[in-house]
Image (tube, rainbow, N blue to C red; front, side, top):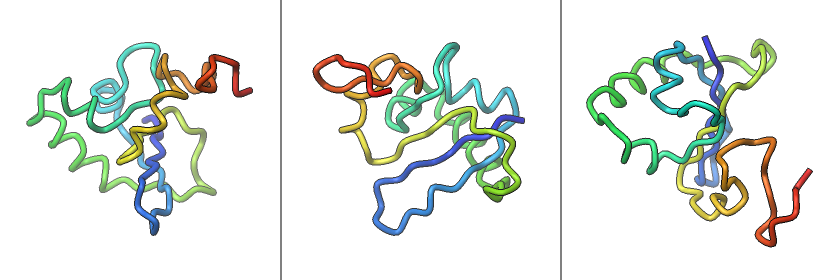
Length: 102
């Protein structure tokens, strides 16, 4: 299982972590990516398979003290953050001017 942290644009979001099977994880995160934006994920499809995967993932919330790492971050309603994750890899995050964030 791989852990996905969900970062939502809602004011009352709590940034939960959910467990995904390897197959579910790869549906959301293409190879060499650990950052995803829900609109891009759904556009890649297949929508029916993604809907089924998310239905299962949402049943597997992981309490933060019990999480053994975060393998991917999924953003909802935060498209303005795409400029920081041009490669969709967390370690390669950059500022809008191209300078590294870390």
